[in-house]
Image 1: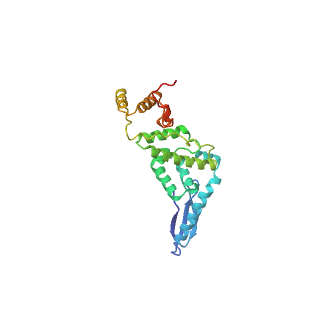
Image 2 (image 1 turned 135 degrees about the horizontal axis):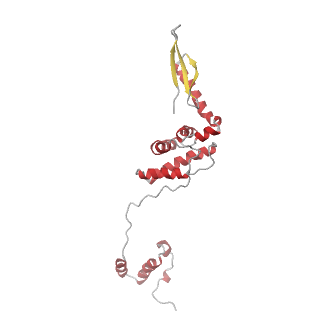
Length: 224
């Protein structure tokens, strides 16, 4: 985002130096904040006008301007008006500048949809980004769209709850074949332990459910 600056002018008649503080309005056109004898005073005035312009832009925008707002132009508004801890905003910025801005900077906030979000997450996955990174991107986008709803840019948040994928298991799942299973069963010291193992394999019941059964039911004696 463009920053305020100072223009220095030297009077041909008196030789005195005067300083004009310059800032940018909502159309990105340079505007004068006044001319002063002191450079710091001119810069302070320019920054004050710039801040007033940024805080007032929310109410000054027409519906057409809101519809045309891109993520790149919305980011400074988000930084200023989204209420989070500074370290959280710093984390948001790192995610924004590295993983969101390169892909979505020209997308319009008002028309952004879930299909476009999914496409972005796919790009990130193809680029080798982890699930945690994609989740961080979803968090930033959801926060930006959430603020846009409160500011009247749109009425829904298409990013919230979108699936960004799951982290692959770091270890291979170990599976034994039927022959090995029966060999292991034969080595169990108690008949009830063998019956317990056979019950889990034959029914597919989860281990946490199987252990809830009372010990008395695990018997090899047929019921009368």
